[in-house]
Amino acid sequence: MDEKKQPRIKILVACHKADPNIRQDDIYMPIQVGKALHPELDLGFQCDNTGDNISEKNGSYCELTALYWAWKNLKDVDYIGLCHYRRYFKMTNAELSEAMNSRDILLAKPLTLSTSVYNELVYWTCLEDATVFIDSILSLFPEYKEDVISYYFMENKFSQCNMMLMSKEKFYEYCNFIFPIIQLTESRIKISGYTRQRRVFGYLAETALGLWLKHNKLKNRKINIITGVPTNRAKELFNDFRFEMAFMLSKRLTSPVSVPIIPPLKTGLTIDGIECNASE
Image 1 (cartoon, rainbow, N blue to C red):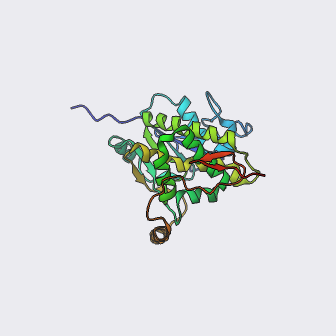
Image 2: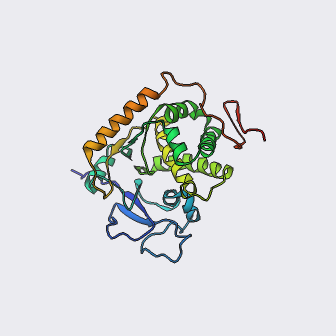
Image 3: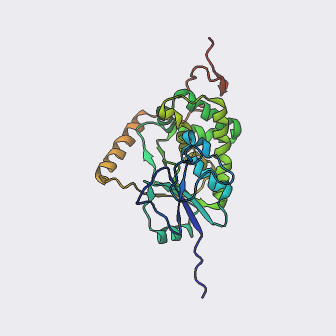
């Protein structure tokens, strides 16, 4: 009897500095991100500035430069994933291989918020940037409108850090979804000098993965993450419950029919017929 074929899996480990504990084996593949910005730094493994790449955008795109590199350059694999030098899926390589024989997509366990995904996005970026991002999604993918309303304004969970593992075909589909959105958003906003806003596109993109999964009705499995930092599971469960209750008490009882955005100043956008540009 033929043995079950083992899937060819590559999970890129995005890193920008040396780490003695970095994983590097048949599945985990370290990639130095932002190499174009720091040519003097050599970590001794694959860099994101080879082939077709956007390495020079790492300051604002974060781990998306690794994602882009994999999309354009990583060949001869069945599954492609992404993690970080301090964050890994809490599964052995054997468990990952077995999981991918029966499932298309693995994700980091979602973060439970006390507010909506959209409000969290505004907190980590700003109102104007979040508005431009939502409008960019709807400009390129208008068929996503109902799911944008449901996911961003009626839900309070999303998988962080752009961590994923999925079939190569699904990975290509996702990249063809997220990168045009980010590129359009980038052309419409001005990055500020503040550190958090400078990383805006990485923050924006990590919320979009859940939207894409929701719209395409893709089955997935949520995996706990190893961070190297001691965690208190009981405290995490208590906080999840507390945040869930806070969100349930505050959210609307019915879904809105339009994108419920308060128009910020000077974005020059129109969402659901509302002009998001105050007159001067």
